[in-house]
Image (cartoon, rainbow over all chains, first blue to last red; front, side, top):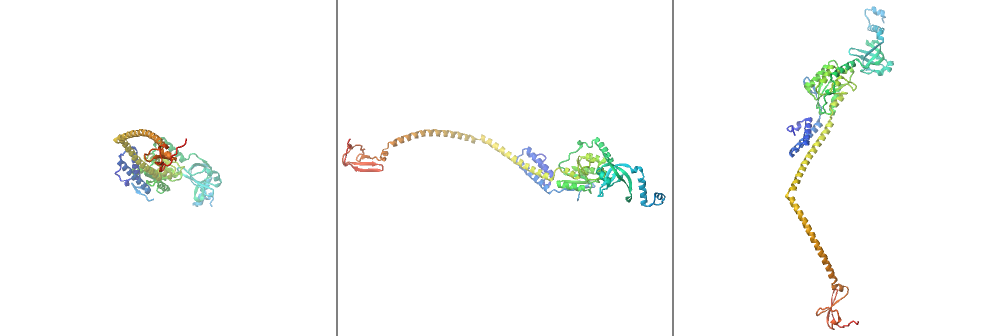
Length: 77
Length: 412
């Protein structure tokens, strides 16, 4: 798999990053053949990514910012 | 109350006198007593009394109008907020408010109001410039994470939009650039908000929203410079201005028009958190089955290889030799058995024949065999014996020793 971001901790990924990597990982599993140990590593990474996405979905809370001057500040509604 | 003569000579008038004078001046003017006036309806009120009150407006001025109940019954259906009409009647003064007003007794719809004419003119101009061309429209991203909103902080529509987005997809980041959405300063504020979005906020999608209002309230979104700024924006833009029936030129310039602010929020979040959860579930399943597949595939490869290995191994050769040997042995054995069985059949025949010759069979039927004790010779005739000789008489379960006493030949 090219452009692998395995160096980045799963816990630091945003939903979009994690989901994107998960899809890329699946496409790689679909299209290429990997050595067994790599195959297992990819699968484990995939499971972690899926779990990360699930957690983020469960915890999701809308973040609202307001432009004040040239700065974006969190907005109290 | 002062007469007209008195009013003309007076040094100082009461408010009532002046108002009455004005009313008389107006009501005696032929033009003002039988006139058609065109404008757009706003501030339409239909109180329980059955009378209808409204303001007729154009860009420069406004005229208060009253439609008494007797006429309202006939004409009420022709009058709606925001539409351009022509009204007929007479102008008078409402003393208590010190306002002149028109008493309407006729209404005809005027297909194109003045604002509408301006709208049409500008629309045509911008259309010819290609500002509204479909191929200029940017695609609305399906998975935008950063969404910019341009609207007033005080309007209810902002809360509607935020609530809708929160309900549909709370994963998103929302960036609000406040701007007036009506009034004189609104065009410039809107234009600078769009610029700030482009330069500072850089969202993936911009919503420009405003709640419902009169045609004048929404007019800022027909401002040529606002429309041009929206058309020129390189970030995909959704407008949600007014109600479903309101179309502004900003709507035409935007990449997508939503009928309301809430609808804009829905179009900005085509994927809800429920969709995301379903997607994720499916994706996880795909991951699983792919992994299983790849392991199965590897197992198959191993099986195939080991089958080929087995095929070429000496063990198989040996097994094959064994098989040949086993075959030969089986053939050998069966030949042997055949011959043996033939022999066996023969022996059984002989045994049967032999058995039939066994003297014991005869004895079993009640006959006895008599032998001379001395020499075991078989006695078959009287002549072989003399009296006093020892004999042995054999029956089926033993033998009897006897002596001859009387020899009696059978008389033939």
